[in-house]
Length: 138
Ligand SMILES: [Zn+2]
Image 1 (cartoon, rainbow, N blue to C red):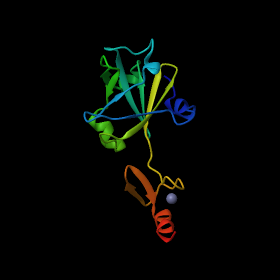
Image 2 (image 1 turned 90 degrees about the vertical axis):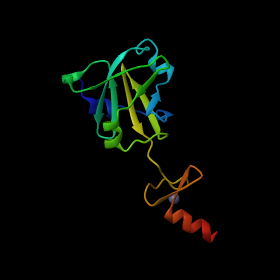
Image 3 (image 1 turned 90 degrees about the horizontal axis):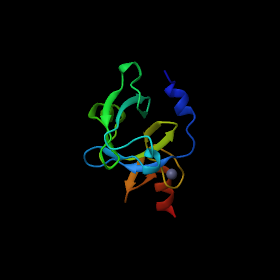
C-alpha cells in the first residue's frame, strides 16, 4: 500500500486550479489524464486530511468508486464534500504524481497580506480585517 501522506508531502507548487461545477464535478486537466485516465476509467477517492487522492487502485477496499466521464470529469461525492467543506464553484488545486491525482480546496486568503483569518469577500477577492482598516484610513 502506498503512503498517501508521503505523496502529499511531495507536492510542489500550487498545482493547477479548477472549479467544482454545480454538480460537484471537477475537470481533471487533459495533460494529467493522458494515457492514464480515460472516459470510463474507474478510480477510487481517498480522503487524506484536507486532500482527496484519486487512485486507480482501491487500497484496502476503502476508496470511494468513481468513473471518469468522457469530458475528463470526476464527481466528488457528498460525504467527502461535507467533510472537507467543498461547495459548488469552489476552486480546487489539482496535482498529479505518478498515476495519482491529488485535490485540495484553495484556501481563501487576503489579497494584500496573505492572512487567512477574519476575511471579507469583496468581488470574488478576500481582504482581512487589518488591511480593510488600513485601506479605509488611506
Ligand atoms: Zn490583509
